[in-house]
Length: 485
Ligand SMILES: *Cc1c(COP(=O)(O)O)cnc(C)c1O
Image 1 (tube, rainbow, N blue to C red):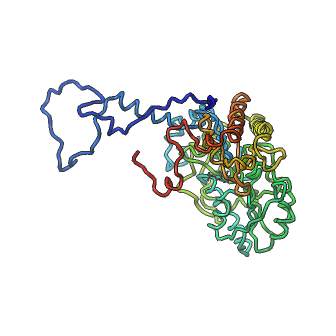
Image 2: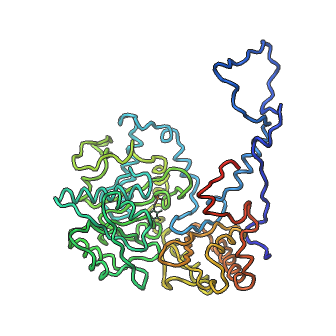
Image 3: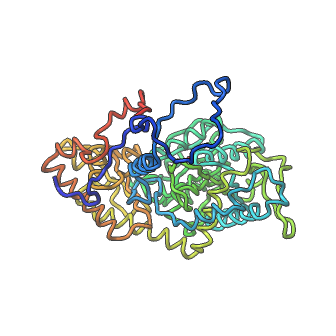
C-alpha cells in the first residue's frame, strides 16, 4: 500500500472504564481520617452506583485517547460540501466565553443586560448589511429552523393579503430541509428540474408559477456550487403573480458582502451562522439560523424584537402581525457572540476577501481534479465543486469506496451522494482557510485513489484499512445501534 499522505497510523486502543478499573485504585490519596467512619445511609443511597475504581492517570488517559478518535476542523482538512467546515479562529470562542456574555441569564430584565441586547441589535444590522436586506431576526436556532420561520413569515404575509396559497416551488437541487419546512407550513412542494447548465431556467418557473403558489425556495449559490444566474428574472416571474422569493442562504460563504440579495429579488433569506460565521456546522453544539427580510415583511418577524430608544435597548413584544415566538428566549446567544466577533474582526473587506478565497480554492480543486474525476458541470463554480464516480464505474469503484479510502490518507471525506441530481455525487467544499499546500496534499490523495481505482480496485473497495474500525454496515448501524462499546 502506498504511504498515506496525512497519517502515520498511531491509533491507541481503549477499553471501557469498567474494564480498566482495579479494586482499590483511587483518584486522590487523602490523609488518614481522625474521626470514626460514618457509613452512608442505605435508605438514602441504596447500594450506590457501580463505578469502577480508577487512578487519576487512568482517567486522564482514557478520555484523552478517546478524544483522539474524533476528527474535527482543528484536526485537519474537512471538505464536507454544503457544511462550510472552515477553521474558526479561537479568539471568537474567547469572546463568547466572557463572563458577562456566557453567564447572562435569558430572563435578566433589559436594564441589566444592555450589552447583550446591543450585541443582538448590532449583529442584526451587520447581517442586514452583508446580505443587502432590511431587517433580521436572530431567534431561529438552526438553518432548518430559519427555513420554518421564513416560511411562517411568507404564510403570514399571504394570510394578511387575504388569500392563502397552497403550493411552493422548490428546485430538484434543494437541501431536503426545504420541502420539509414548506410542508410544515401546509404548503405542497412543487419540484422543478434545473436546466442542462445546472441552474434554474426562467421558463421552467414561468410554467408552474400561478396565483395558488406562495413563492419559491431557492438556494443561491445552489447545492451544485453554481450561482443561479437567472435569479432576477425568476424573482420577477414569482413577484408578478404575487409570490415571494425565499433564499436558502446556507451557502453564503461564497458571496459574503458580494451579492446584494435584496437587489436580486430575494424577500426572505436564512443564514447559517454555524457555517459561515465562526461556529463549525455539525459540531454537536447549538447553531443559529437568522432570517433576513425586506422591509414589508418586518412586521411578521418573531417577537420579542430588540429595539433601541435613545441610547438604551429594550425588548418589544407588542407587534400584532408577528408570527410569535420561535423559541423560549432569543436564540443561541453564544453563537451570535462568535459571529459578531468574527464580523467585527474581519471587517467588510475581510469578509469579501474570505468569500473570494473560498471560491478560488474550490475552483483550484475542481481544475486540478477534473482529469481524474468526472465533473458534473464543467463550468466555473462558487465555493464547492461536485464530481461523480462515473469515471471509476468501469472498475466497479463507487463514491462510497473512495470516500472510505480517503480516510486512509488522513482526510475527512467530502459530502457524498448529495445533491441527488448528480448520480454518485462527490461534493467538495475546501473553504478559504486551507493553504495551497494542504489543498495540494488533498489533491494528491484523490489522484492516488483514482489511480488505485484503475490498478488495484480491491484496495479501494475494501477501504478503510487504517482506521479504528473498518467498513461499517451503515444500515445495521442505523437500525440496531450498539451504544455500549
Ligand atoms: C446546512 C444546510 C441547511 C440546514 O441547516 P441546519 O442548520 O443543518 O438545519 C439548509 N440548506 C442548505 C443548502 C444547507 O447546506
